[in-house]
Length: 264
Ligand code: NDP
Image (cartoon, rainbow, N blue to C red; front, top):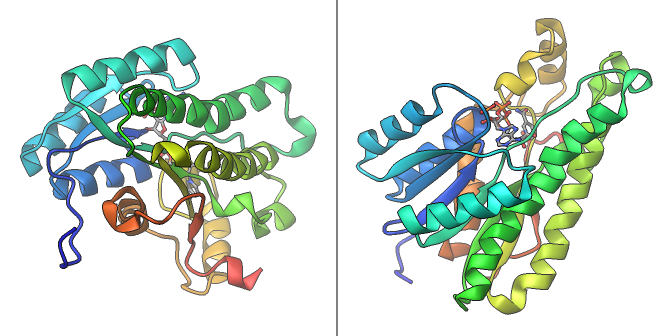
């Protein structure tokens, strides 16, 4: 390892699920800026291919979009093999794709449960295992997985106390995925694979758009930093965990929440 603290992903291939917009798009750009090739997994956005290739052109790396629903196990395995052949070998994964079901608990259905857990828990598991399989089969003794959890893995945010719109399936799915992070880290450590989670607070993306402005203002005023984060503010911690600088870090959950947790 060089002595200067620079993060470089030159000659690496990193998969980012949900890498075409929101926080994932910020990850895609940051990896590309650090010289890495990026495989962007998306579900249905029409402009994902153009988004990925534009990032590639901007930073002079290979960046390509792959349409793949992360909740479909066989498709995920097939897509990871395809990425590995076309862009790989894959060296890292940010399992970031996530969805919510912002409804009062009394109105939630089994379909809502499946919608949230299929992506936020099973989708993370599917993609993490697909990457780990590739590394374990080739005895790579390396590989880094970063999972996007949420500060709601630990707390029920104030909007849940003051507003009828709550997120009980979302919050509990994030608690599940934070625990999944620890289990996978323990199980795969002997293969040299590290697994960590980054847990954002409120970030300005489509996922926080459903809140009324007055609720957003109220939430922001309760945060020590008094504002929601920009997506790019999530990238420092995620890229550190992905990189060789974090070679002794595994099984951790790291909060990037503007100080929200310390005030609960
Ligand atoms: P967005 O809603 O902006 O983007 C979601 C992304 O996930 C899109 O790229 C979408 O693809 C992709 N996606 C959704 N479902 C699937 C699926 N089944 N298969 C493949 N891709 C899928 O979300 P954010 O950027 O806000 O959130 C990113 C992550 O950060 C999520 O895990 C979220 O829970 C977490 N998070 C977000 C916070 C916030 O305040 N925004 C706070 C804490 C955590 P497509 O465009 O094709 O639909």
